[in-house]
Structure formats: C-alpha cells, structure tokens
View 1 (spheres, helix red, strand yellow):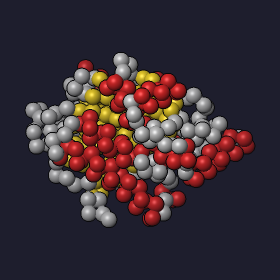
View 2: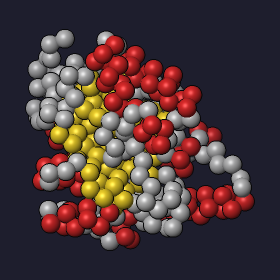
View 3: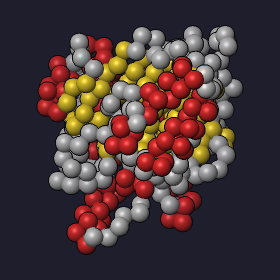
View 4: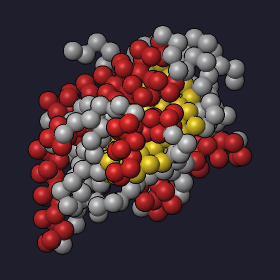
Length: 322
C-alpha cells in the first residue's frame, strides 16, 4: 500500500495487567483515561504538524513517564531492595537506529536517556552508573529520588514482600508487569517505537526486562512495523516477541493484525508470557492485542479522534474529555 501523505497513526500503552475491574473506582478509571489522553495529545501534536514518528513517540512516552499512575519515570515501581531501577529504549524505523538504557535512576525522562544513547554515542545500550554519567554529559534533566516516590508503588512493594515471606500466591497482574510505550507511523511513511518501564514490583536488583532489549520489547523497521511490548519480560525476551511480529510479516506475509495475534495469543500466552503489545505498520494499520485482564491503551489517527480503553472493551472517544 502506498502511504497516504495525509495519514498518520499513533498508538500508546500504559502497561498490561491492569487494576482488576472489581477494584477500579470511577475516579481512578477517569484518571487513567485522562493520562492516556494527554500522551495521545502530545504525540498527535507532532504528527499533525508533519513531524517525525521518532519525535511523536518520544513526546508520548515522556507524557506517560510524567504521570505517576503508570510504571515508568515518576511512577516507577521498586526493587526488592527498595530502590527504583528504570529501563527504556527507542528505535527509528528509517534505519534501525536504536538506543537504550537499563538500571538507572535520576534522569527525569528515561526515554530521553535512551534517545541520547542512540543519537550521541556509538552504542545501543548503556547501563547503571556509566549510563547516568553519560546522561549528565548530555545535559539531561535529573531529579532527586523523592520526585519518583509514590505511596502507591511503595505500598505495593511492602505488600509483595509480605506475600513472598508468607508464601502467598500473587495473582495481581499489575505487580508483575507495568510499562509504557508508543508506536507511530508519520505522514512520510516512517515508523518508530519507544518503551519505558520501572520493571516488576520487588524484582531482584539488577534485573533487566524486555523493554530495553531491541527485538524483545521494542522494535521498528519501515519495511514492516513498529512494536512496543508490556508483559512478563523474561518470556518476551526468550521469544524475541517484537522482532517475531516483524519477521512473520516479512517472511510469512502475514498482516500486522495476524502476526501480532499469533505472537501474543499463540506463542507468549502458552509459555506464561502474560501481557500485550501495541504495533503499527508502514501503512498506518495498528494492532493492540493482549492476553491478560486488560491493557491501558490508546490510538489517534488523522481524524484526530483520541480513543482509549482499559479492559476488553472498545476504544472510546475521549477527545472532548475535561
């Protein structure tokens, strides 16, 4: 399909494994929809003005990182040692340029740290203190640990540690995988992907999930698609989930919708890979499959309608929401 110069698509997610519907209050549900809407607005402003997909996914993910409701940036969860260790990645479908960071705390927006690695280093992935020193040299904005503290995430850690101590089974998906991400196709026909996360509640210090692993939780190639994942990172890594979707499109001729469904439902789910993905192809089609109770998600296209959803319900127009 020849790209239409008037079309663009932006899809976002705020993590799979949502708050159980039985525990979701109307006020909190409205807050999640509002947070998703702000991220869509940030990315749409770039794309509607003819901007690049790379800039759109950066803007959308920054908005999600700034929202404490989501497990990235300001809302990042805690390790078992009571620390926050954040991961992020970004990829440009035009030339497969990519950058990622892992195990960091300090940069206000980890996705900007990942982009700095892509644009200003000769590497793809930097970790820990060396990554932080690189970010300082690049002049990125830093915040103190208190900026990233939220009572909700701290309490989730205490609850999880108590369950682990008592041997109680934790069935709350929201503790196991929370991530934010964005994928876009711009009016020039280029795609990009960005993903950012605090990881799993009570994860082992030093654990790195799929988000900053190119081909696992993040992927972009103009020839096929852009993908951002959210779920059980170890399984997404073992199955190279994001790249598998692109490969099925490239080599098996599957559509974006079919490839995404097969990977999420038929590969990841049986292996214990609870979660989902968002994806957009070179023609602007999008897919948002997930195999768990819900996934915070949203889409905007050239009609400018902002649509969001949480559970297995249809995307609803939130364009006029306050």
